[in-house]
Length: 109
Image 1 (spheres, rainbow, N blue to C red):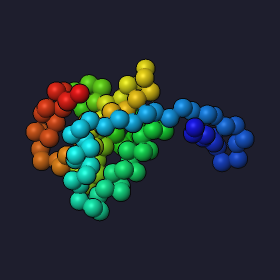
Image 2: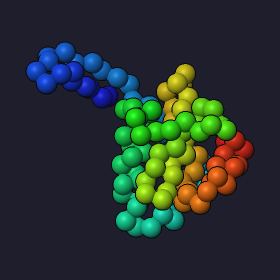
Image 3: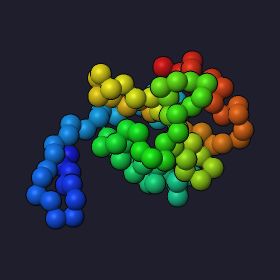
Image 4: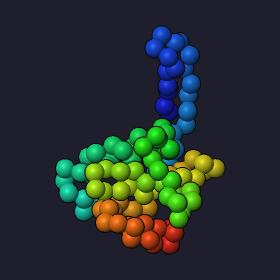
């Protein structure tokens, strides 16, 4: 359970149910193969999605509505949000090489 405090001196607390995070097989493989110094920040970014699935740094992909990407240096964490099920599915973690980075994203789970 996540509790969040509003305002510096506020005593109002709001309880939010965190989103569940699932990984595709490709995303699990990608996370294991990330260089060691990128793995901890990637995991932290993914964990933070539970509280806020659409953080200000997330961009919705133009060619794949409902799918988002987070930037971690030259790496991209690509994910889908399902608000009805309170679920986030990490689709892939890829190195940004150009537009082809996102070409087959619609075909992934």
